[in-house]
Image 1 (cartoon, rainbow, N blue to C red):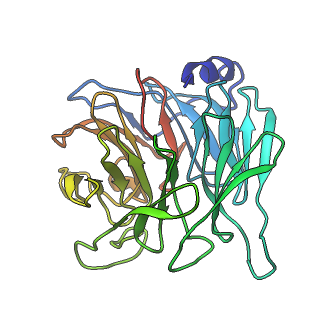
Image 2 (image 1 turned 60 degrees about the vertical axis):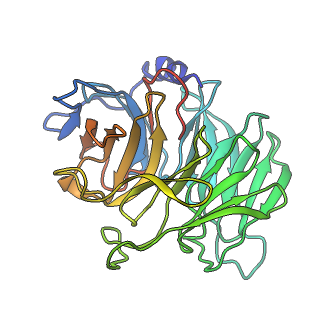
Image 3 (image 1 turned 90 degrees about the vertical axis):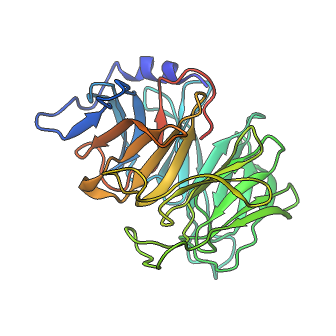
Length: 320
């Protein structure tokens, strides 16, 4: 994935630069680590450099639970609850998809996850319609996978969806509190249900089982962003927890709504800490020994609904 191509083209025409008085922290004094990143919140996508300056931005007009930089240097991002675009660094739309309800009894459709596949098709997860689609450049549906949802809700059927090396899909079913792995026919071949692990307080800043994300690691284990479960889990095929990061394990940094994760080549895990407000960083990088080596907090460019983000300066493959 060529992250740098997007930045080289995009930096030529920034919409705004660093502002005076911004609350920015993009490093860890202990480790000396800092990162460049691209993220979405406050209805825009922005690139922030290692010093905290904004170099490129684009108003997408909505929130985002997913975001991708493509091998051709373009950006894949939402422009409404039900539409996504492929955007060039010059901010030209080169491809678009809009989801519509399949039947009159479906109130609306929301897209919380999407992914450009190696074969050039784009996977799109449709809440409301309860399906995954693979669509081509001409907008034709090439494959459809029905989803099995116990507690349907147009806003909570799914959160993040990711393909696996085996050609299956890991789907985080938020309302069901479960991660399900689907084969090409829509059969569930693996499932993990989150445990409450503490008293329930199912709010944005509370505790529940509203799972957000799941990723298949090279080991075959699954890394899970627990949403308002307030923790990160790594589980094996039998559902055994082999590693975890709980809400109160890092001194001074409580975990709230744990959303997108990034598994780095060095073994570290990047955790997005959504809805934490000003008390804690929006993003942290932790070692497997649970030491924080980098943290990010920018309360002006982004707010407490920052979910989708990508580190731009990591050498090697990142699972996100």
